[in-house]
Image 1 (cartoon, rainbow, N blue to C red):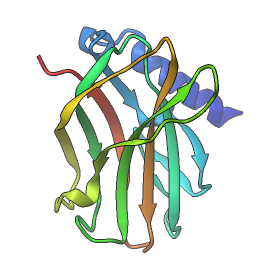
Image 2: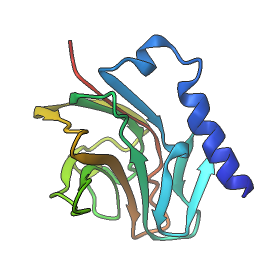
Image 3: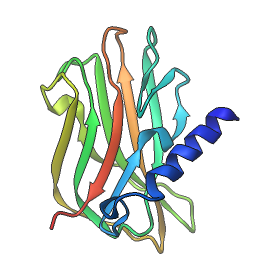
Image 4: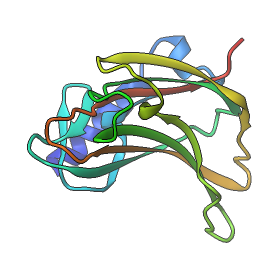
Length: 169
């Protein structure tokens, strides 16, 4: 219960009293400590970052709701570390999912970021423009951002700090 309260408090504080940019209708920033863990029991919270617990391997999945005020986005920004870069022992993947409000059917997931696309091995604040604008239909669908942290070697680090979806001016 304490962990749930901490997560809920962190989520609320990310939006209450935030800078105007953080709550603008054309931007959404999510502190990953506010996301729900839906798969994997080896997660560790370190300040404002989330990662896989030391000595553990596998995949941890975080689900983060998309604000209904966000109409579309064409750029993603996230802070992460993938200590093996383009290697195959760790990755951070960000996906947008939609669920039909009437039928509860999931749409085809839209992969918007994969850390193995980049050779960077240190902490990175990556801003990436998408190939096209993603428009939300909040009348018919619920949307969420899914973050998969995966590692097959305990020596690989794949923490993530924040995810921000926005439309460039």
